[in-house]
Image 1 (cartoon, one colour):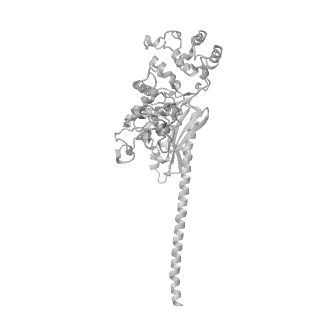
Image 2 (cartoon, one colour; image 1 turned 90 degrees about the vertical axis):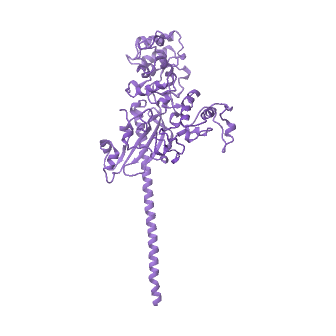
Image 3 (tube, one colour; image 1 turned 120 degrees about the vertical axis):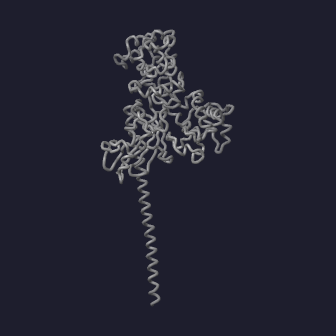
Amino acid sequence: MRGARAIILPVVLVLIGLLSLTMAGFIFFVRAEIAGTAAHCDAQQARLAAESGLEEVVAILREHPHDATVWFEAPDRLRHALVWAESYDRESDPVREMGSRQELLEGMVTPVSAWRYSVVAQAYDTVEDTVRYGITPEAGKLNINVATEEQLEQLLMPLLLGLEVENAPELLEALFDWRDDDDQPRPSGAENDYYNTLEPAYLAKNTGRFDTIEELLLIKGFNAAILYGEDVNRNGILDTNEDDGEDSFPYYDNADGVLDRGLAPFLTVWSRETDVALDNKPRINLNADRGVIEAQIATYFQEGELSDETIGFILGLKDDNFNFADLGSPAELYQGIDLPELEDEERVTEGALASSPITAGELPYLLDRFSTRAANESQQVIEGLININTAPAIVLELLPGLDAESAGMLVATRRDLDREALRTPAWALTSSVVGLAAFHQMAPYVTTKAHQFHVEVLGYADHARLSRRTEWIIEMAGPLAQIKYTRDLTSLGMAWPVDDDTIVVTTD
């Protein structure tokens, strides 16, 4: 009996130990589940915060779809915007009052629960390594589906050489082969004979149309290092790891202190618009019947927008059976009679247009309201027009009649113009940035309208580290926003230094 009693104590202690271990494991499991649930909840909150940023962009575009002064650079509205906070609302948000979220967080022992978003975009033609808070219209890029081979070569060759690509001509030929409609490879290109040897095999597109810019990765010789350059996190900023050579990923950066952005930021497949005016009314097609044109002019124009002489001149051309389809755009109806700084040979055009009474003040209305497209094309969309209010200089250089100097002047001049001046492309001429001949050349290929937009939003909190990063391509069809493309970029990291007040691009 005495021996049996001696065994009881060790058994009890062992059982207590086992129960303790079981309970400790259970508590650890419960805490892990709680932490996981909280992390999942925060991830959902961050995603919803980012989507709130998208909804804010849509609300802005419903009111100002073509006014880049409202949404291209708008840090006051699109940076650290409050979605929800535990103890204050947007009107009393201390970040708005202090002007700095970093300062707010540094002054708090325990940050107040608050969710925010920032709408971020890459900045071009400004101080290097700066951040723009706004959205990017796809019309500010070169549409790879309608660009000529000359335009693509002019844009891509310097970018490829900047990336130190040794076979740039071969890459361009492979790209052209992918777009053309035949199966005959160019000397250094590639067609089905090449793509059928790959594993897995596939066929060249041979339709002339890309569905996304990432489709370039299917073409012989192209890879992510070419498409995105050194900017592996796609924030437009030269981060430390993108400028240290082989010390860290990406191992192919050249450590020259300059960010090579790759091809993707300057190309699009989305830009298109219908042949309508800024108020969404169909343009007056000058190839229509005279009676229709006269009735539309009387309906669409307010008193003082077009003179009686101008209206009579246009209708007189119709009476003389002038073929407006021979004009590249309505801009050619303007001959610069009120721009005395132009040379005589540049100002005067021989033939029916030489006596044009149209003035520079009427030019914006002329460009907005009239169309010279063939009557049977008036219902077709126009692809690939370049928005001169937002396109970077490297894209503007691709326009007929422009060079690097004039493209740079366009970028510099537009920052000082108000929204009324920027309504139509007329400002490029009336601001004396380009001459009349160059303006006539570029006018058929430019726009100030925007329908498709690249939107990138960060959703994050003041009280938590977790964040979400999402991008969208949206198309505004009147007041309706259609999502054409979306992608979660959270795996690339937060990337954007949203609390660094020294690198913010502003209109000032």
